[in-house]
Length: 107
Image 1 (spheres, one colour):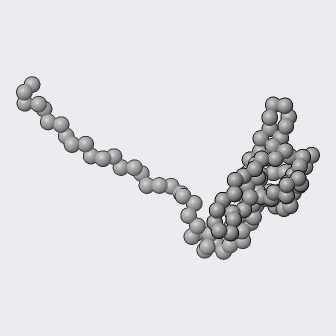
Image 2 (cartoon, helix red, strand yellow; image 1 turned 120 degrees about the vertical axis):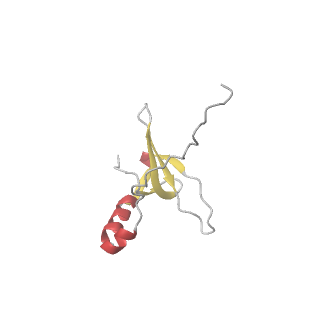
Image 3 (cartoon, rainbow, N blue to C red; image 1 turned 180 degrees about the vertical axis):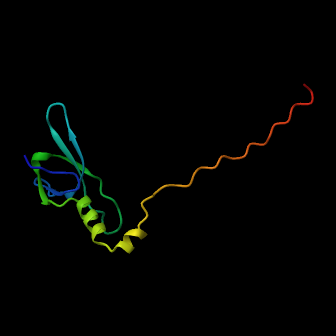
């Protein structure tokens, strides 16, 4: 059995469908299925992902997309790395001021 990991580019040997592995499911009976997301069409439309048995997939690119992203980020200059927003800490949430309650004169 191949060692296919999430983020690898694979091809289905039956249909020729290619894309990136985005999910990995192991069923109780031992069946392993991988969900493959293809690239977007040239007109900007998305193509529905498909799921395949692991036995009918072959690896096109062993380098995962996550590895490419990490390598690309590491190779950038430190000044550029500082420009990338990681979300970071957010400012403390301020509570809204509640108007003071005055005693009811009827009581």
